Image (cartoon, rainbow, N blue to C red; front, side, top):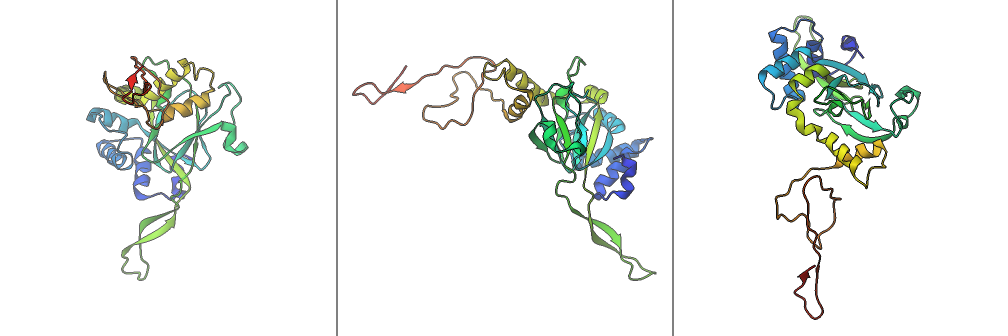
Length: 281
């Protein structure tokens, strides 16, 4: 859906204002300030830690797109075009075994199972699409498909309107309307993302590092891409100082530990015959 089709679409006031502001071909200072104000409200983490100049350039070139429920945002194997942030609604990520060269499917052709297994859902305020970008500009193709979940439960919204009890006086009041079942995404074009955001988002690229580590591991080197992606999203990185205890004998096992750097010493404490003090072996 194009933003200029939004006259027939019912959105909350702030989202509609953002759609209108980003539709402007001439983004002067006032328009840029409005875009930044609205983005800070709808997706505060997007611009977190960025300098003012970076924010202004992002506001000058960002785009907003509307996706009906089940619309394809991008397909596994596509070339990366932008960094995406969910402003309203949600999207779901799917990945499959097949190579990117396989013929593309669309949600209209059947169920979402054609896009592989479900990986995760991205809620409002969160971003996605950074895994394909590389610092040297040699970007990777999309390793998963993203599908719109529409408004994701935002069925009704409250809006200001005017009462029509009198032709001479009209007073504002709140009315409840059925919201359109669309997902609203903010796109930062690839070149803008690389120049203004990539360096500040180094932490986000840890997921790509996790995937590379998994592929090198003996345990995971034969796993399919959809399985690797799902595990990478669930992985957490932890750092331990020398001498720190990672896990103690008798603790409940909650994680599979993979050593990224350094080494660990494993010890098992057993009591010798007729001695309950125990010893390290």
